[in-house]
Length: 266
Image (cartoon, rainbow, N blue to C red; front, side, top):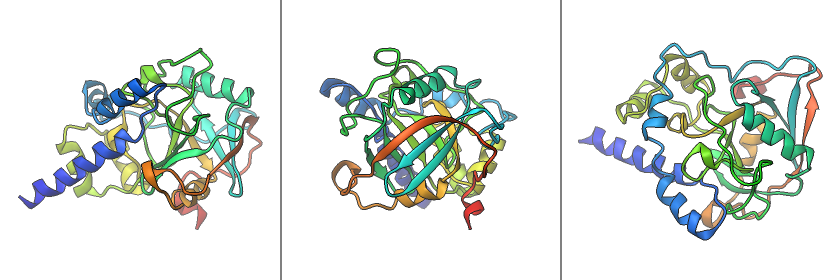
């Protein structure tokens, strides 16, 4: 009975946090997103972990001269992001195109939940706006080689990856020991052995795998992301004091630091 209570609490928390990742364009879509946002445990999400030997590439270091994103958070500093054009071609194309138009300059992180994620990319600052370079929404798809571990950069959506737009989140998450991971897998979520190891050592949000388009990974500035998640928030998890994206640009990696793990900052 105690085990069932623990899982019920975990399931409720998962449903609540997953609903927080919705991104939509109008009030009607917003209400639908609240309904569909907690249904990440559908077949698409389940099937993403089917390959127990899937190679996870989140922590692949960038090569000198390749395109990276540099996200500058006002009064905080630069967060550098490795991109995965092979695994998330349309997702990378979209984010680079938006950055080239200076789309994100001055936009806030409108929703922040400690030990889960920081979410931004909506020019209205409400969680109800934003669009892709393709005109409205697009389908960024998923790759079983990319997971929602700490530092993953992922598109928010309103029920499926076919509703990707401009909004994104950066995962902070918590670590999953064997008991906590068993609760996840007992709930029907399939997690590869390689992913389990990463979630145990670095943390993240494993129940989101397969339902959201992962397109990048923070490789420098993860300490800034973890600092930002501690800001005071109010209604709808919106920071009481704006956390502003000063700018986000595509740059060439110059061979600087690579720090994928919070342990690298100690």
